[in-house]
Amino acid sequence: MNLGWIPEFPWSWTLLAGEWLVRLSMLVYIPQRRPAAAARTWLLLIFLFPWGGLVIYLIVGRIQIPKRRRTLLEKLSRTIRDAASGLPPEVRTPVDQLPEAVANAARLAERLTAFPMLSGNTVELLPEYAASLDRLATDIQNAQNRVHLLYYIYGDDDVADRVTIALEQAARRGVQCRLLLDGIGSKQALKTVAPRLRAVGVEVIEVLPVRFLRPRGTRVDIRNHRKVAVIDGRIGYVGSQNVVAPSFVPGFPNEELVARVTGPIVAELEAVFWVDLLQEQEPAVDSSPSWGPIARTGEVFAQLIPSAPSYRQQTFAMLLVSLIHQSRRNVTITTPYFVPDEPFLAALRTAIERGVQVRLIVPLHSNRRLTVLAQSSHYEELLEAGVEIHQYRTHFLHAKSLVIDDDLLIIGSSNMDIRSFAINAEVNLLIHDADVARQVRDLNQRHLDQSDRLTLESWQRRSLAARVAQNTARLADSLL
Image (cartoon, rainbow, N blue to C red; front, side, top):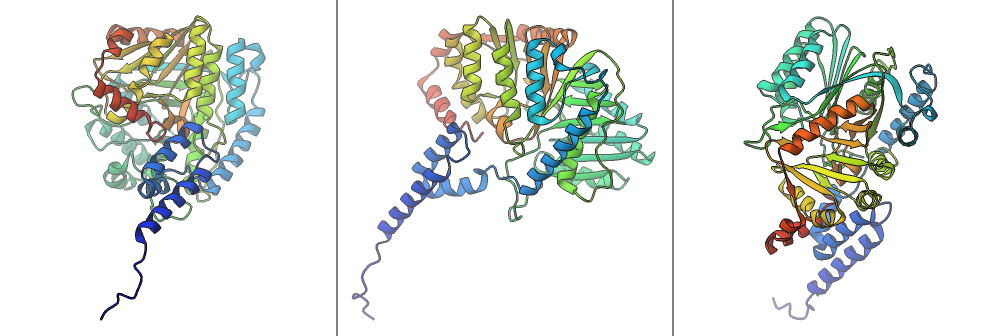
């Protein structure tokens, strides 16, 4: 049959019009309530590859948190504020009695997260990988009442098995054991270890489970990156270490930093655990958060800084910038990944202009090639500004810490990158104590002794191919 009388449909023009419709629509939509750098990254991708960029954006581009989670977090934050307001003065020292920089940081952190600065704590640093997990397993074995664990990665290996066996033994003794595991970071353990633990009575809960067709679900790459342990409400662990073998980078095992804490600060750690538990199970949980016990065990001031997309502000990023602006003598940053946003970079440059020594310690070897490329794209401007960059060569340095001047520091789970600032759920500990700060400075010095200092002259001699790869990766810094 001759259909020559039917005009040819202008598919090419329709496709072109569709591409421009995508571009112009996203030009209006994407910049709404989004940092300028992230908006530029997404718009560049969509303008170059409209349809592919649109698909990627729909999957991982929107920081979409179900309204139920935001509402519950706000409700729990009010509960935390009310509980904190009733704490005795020997635990909650008025911040105006603290040094100005500490007081300013404490006020900002409490305003952002509801958690106050608490006195009367003891902080023990655990930088040795095996010893840290052995100490955790021993504390679980000695538990009398409850064990609450929250981890991004929990392994099915001989190293993690020490903790798994301790949980099994505690559960058989009648200790209430709960284990929260991230749905992607602990995917394997949820399949293999979780049934084993549930069989003896351990309650294992998947956090942020991946459900592609789940209504009101979150982005696939929004993860709970926290590492928290609380035993009997008396002992807490917080830091960078997961419960897994330290072999992420072949030949260069992980090196971590964990703080084992006792005192009132443990109540804040347990409150963070409960917030995450209730967001997954509410209202099925038959208990509620508790602030007890609050007995003093030492003299350290400490304050918990949780951060997550559910908060209305980027709490950790804002605190970092504020602390760096208040620094007077030195700032030392230790992190496996350093992909800063512009306010963070500006704070570092301003600190150097005030005469502050700024040092950055990063691992020479890493497991995330694209992130390292984006990170390296900042090195030249950092070196030109006067930042000292030291590359630790003996291990994969996965520890995260920030030391300001003589007595203020942060230890926790957050990397110094945009993903940790805006996308992941993290938890960090702000500490005011000269002795703990000295211990971290000593640890930093050990890292510096085993590092290669990068110079501007040597860095500028890198190849053109390296420059192109680094600058291209930097275009995706908001996506890493």
